[in-house]
Amino acid sequence: MTDTTTIEVDDGTSLALAAARARRRLLEAPGLVAYIRTLVVPGLGGAKDGMPRAASKEPPAPMRIEAADDSDSLYAQLVNWVDYWAERLSVNPPATLLAVWRNKSDVQGFRGTVTPPGAGQLVGYLTTWLLIRHDEIAAHEFGRAYFDDVSTIIRSAQARYARAPRGDRHVLPRPCPVCDHFAFGAEWASEDVADFVLRCEHCGHEEPAADHLATEKATRHLVVALREERNVWDRQGVLAFYDEHGYYPTQEVQRCRVCGDLVEHPERGRPRHLNDDDGREPHEPQVASNPTGASA
Image 1 (cartoon, helix red, strand yellow):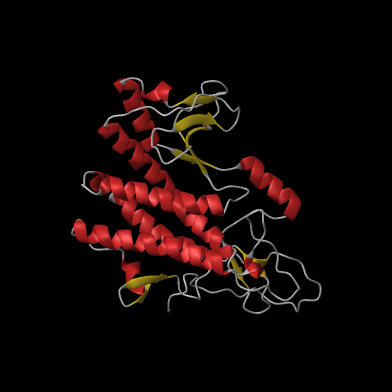
Image 2: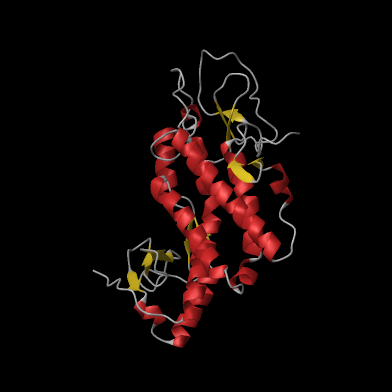
């Protein structure tokens, strides 16, 4: 078994690892929130495997309050951090913050009309704004506290709402030294930024943190590689999903305004109903032109 015992690192390395972990979490946040929102109303995709399913003919189940609350909380905490850094760095926040649902000064979360892809899009506006200023934030005295906080917030939601197939995996821009596949990435085991392993998704090869933090040169190479991570998709999981359901998993799903069934790809090409229903009156799928729920 690979030794995952944590080691002591200097403040500069600790900050760099915290920044890398926070960057990873922020990149994963939009897809995660979009998925959680599909669980709010079961008719929009409350399947246990984490992907949307065709609408049931049974009466809809009650709204899942915990999924709504958790996604609202994550969104609200990101909004608060954007507000904080906009003031600290003397820059304008993203324009979408003007439409955030607030009660006096407190952020309440998403508007009730927001769709799952719209929620992911709104979170993406925030995380993109934060990531653009990632290095500037790292130089600030409260940058480390921010990195740890957003990592904890997003990781807690990931643990509660696991997806299958999972979202894109972030891997180093170099192949695995054993199988030569680009599937080699860092996985943190705890809140300690030095408690991680580099694991290959393809062959299972692992290397402990100690192998990459033993010298200044090795640490520098690791930090650079973490900054240049790339996304890879869960090919095996996606193909297995297609074999079972007959369509590819996608976040671009809305409810048809005419019949209430799910419609795929409302923003790419021609919309289509996900399920074939002989009893449905023939009609073209009708979906919201603005999935964020904001006023036109």
